[in-house]
Length: 387
Image 1 (spheres, rainbow, N blue to C red):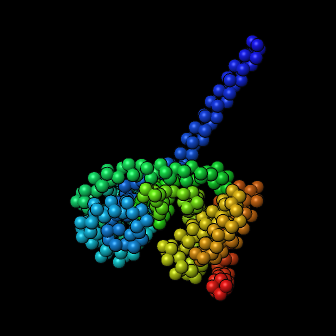
Image 2 (tube, rainbow, N blue to C red):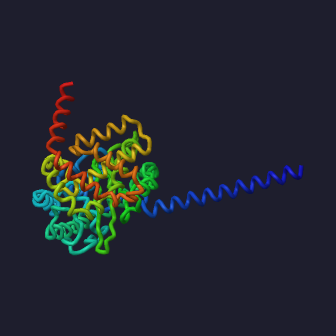
Image 3 (tube, rainbow, N blue to C red):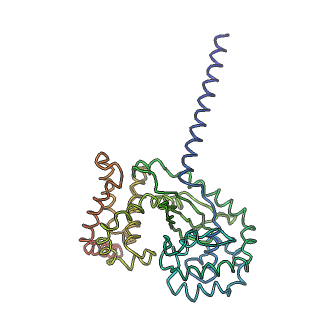
């Protein structure tokens, strides 16, 4: 009996040690993940600018997919629709073409209210998106500070604190399913800089991936996630199948963007040729230059590679590919095959950066075939319509 009791206590002790090691391991993994990928949160800067451009009547910031929050905005800010700031946005900034991602780019290049100012000066030396100009940016921030006080924005944000907390807590289900180990294994390197997830409650169905580049070379890439679904109580409801593909997409930017920039001179010729052939389609998606198009092209192809490596069903993968082809990334299928070739030859290409010269060749070939790809795309669409 004493032997049995002794064995029993040994097993309990071993079990306790094993559980302790498991807890330490899980905590270590969580800490490592959070060092790379901060937990999601609502950002006052993002909310403030989405509200301002909503008040100015900008259609991309005027969706009503989160009715309870939109009603809260309208109740508080309706009487400020004729404020000097809103007039400036309508009469000048919109005329300059500022909207969509340029708005969110400004949001991450400024300090949090109430003392709003540029994080980096002068604006001309920052990663702030075009078509912002330094003079228009400076005037906008001056009026924005006045608006923040006049419209008592602090009261609005304080009254929605619990909502912001609830939304970000609900989004953790999406955030926690991101396989960070795959990213580092696939790219063969850690992300360039930081990656931050922002829950944009006033952005409707639109999500954005702006970045800020600091003078010391550090970069912070953002995934500003829209909120386009609510539950029966009217609260944000972040379903994995709806939101995970977007966060999966955006995190790739922190590995891709700097590589395209590094190989800018080698990619520019092919990028210019291809972009000019699909310019209208790209502009409709707010991609205004070949560099942004190439960032997106590589990110979208890498998403499909992630899906394949994580055994997504064939139908989901084909749907994702069709979506890219319909968005005029006509070379996506071939680009995915190039990424698979890279991944199958890691002895020769330990990191994606080592494979960039091959991708330069790929895009040169794509540029020479872009007219044919467009013809095939048109014929495919016409056939689909007939059927």
